[in-house]
Length: 335
Image (cartoon, rainbow, N blue to C red; front, side):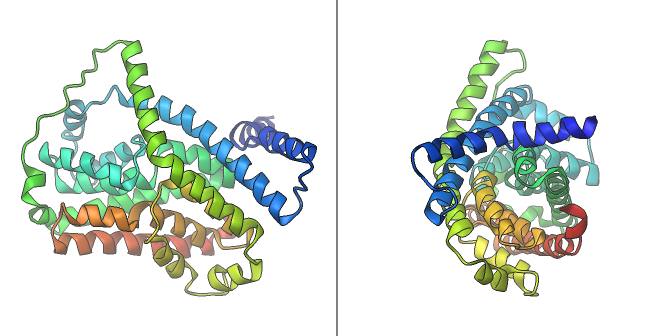
């Protein structure tokens, strides 16, 4: 009974199978052959765009409403109670409830640093925030299933916790630029606001997020449609398939010039997975885009000094590549 309910929830609510069938019916009614390359691309594009935006609107609003209970001053008090790995774990978990892309996370990182939080906590947050969030867990579940979604989030948190811990143990705090450590006036948002004010705040965050990511989602779905219906499966498998021992490394490296959040990468990942690319390679590509994108690296380079920058990039890259190979090895248990 529980499995039946979960299958319905994952297929019809998260996966929106009803939407898939509806778009098929509409396109067939318009004379579009959805089994052809062009028709399949059109179907893929409209289905993924509508599905992602529906999930995004609902999830970002809910997450932002919850986030209104945790202004920076309160967050600092909460995180200040923890030490060591526990503190880094809290910083990483905080990143999961902030629906920011990598570039949007950097001002928050500066705010935490200027508020006096330890460098390990702030870097755990900086790694976790674009890499994993509650919304991504739901969207990943709708596409790949619960096992892969949970595994992705868990590994993302591990990379964030380990990364923050290593940076703190290595004494890297002195390599944060001085301007980022200057005391700043904390956001005076208080927890004593009305539900209507929280809803207005959540709507504002939703609007801002949509404005920032909608173009990346459209581009990501377009690329996914091309991969899914136009790029030969044999070429994809030879380049990124399990027979290529360097597939995870290649996927990680080609993700760096790209920029987007996880919602924009999911359609591309879905198309790669459909071409029999290993799940570890697919997830390495997704993590690379969200955590190692060139624009975000340029921004973070302005905030930290070269030694810390190299350590930061190296830790994330090694973490992603290691995760990719482990997931490819365990694919039979995850899919």
